Length: 209
Image 1 (cartoon, rainbow, N blue to C red):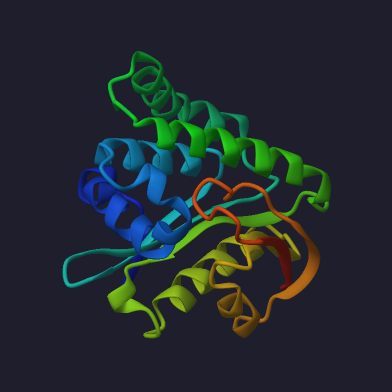
Image 2 (cartoon, rainbow, N blue to C red; image 1 turned 60 degrees about the vertical axis):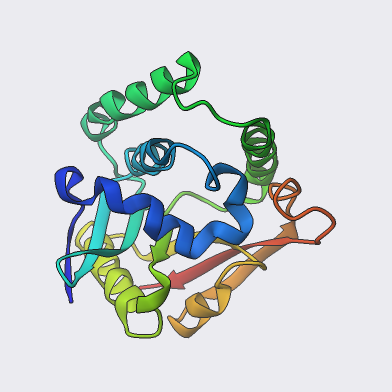
């Protein structure tokens, strides 16, 4: 097992597989039958809003990812992400991904739901923005290795806590095993297209370092 920085040349093509393993049940409208570049570009765009993009490697390829952010992210770091975000936006607006209607409806609902949840978000601090593992490597310490690497990064910036957003239909139990405490809960509407009729709660977790 090796935890290392994300390398686009080596890891870009692995992102759809890793993301789908953790999120297919809540994100199938943007995964099933969709251009895999869309998923890779979307995930890369998420990484550019932070300063931490690491993978855990086993058997010669990435098997898990963790994106993270801290309130001390520099303007230069955000500016460097414009090329990634610009490529994603350009392909999206030009229609080159050829997204089906259900994917577009899902995307709109996720944006509306998560935007509505911003009112519940606590003060800015370090945050895990995405964590996902290939299913076959769960329960083997890969997620813990990524989280530990992020904690080391956060401590080096003299930040005292880490927060994250997760949901009742995701692996929130993992974060409690890692020492996080739930500090906020509310009804989530982001997954109404993917999970019609299923009640979903959003959770904010925090761990003091």
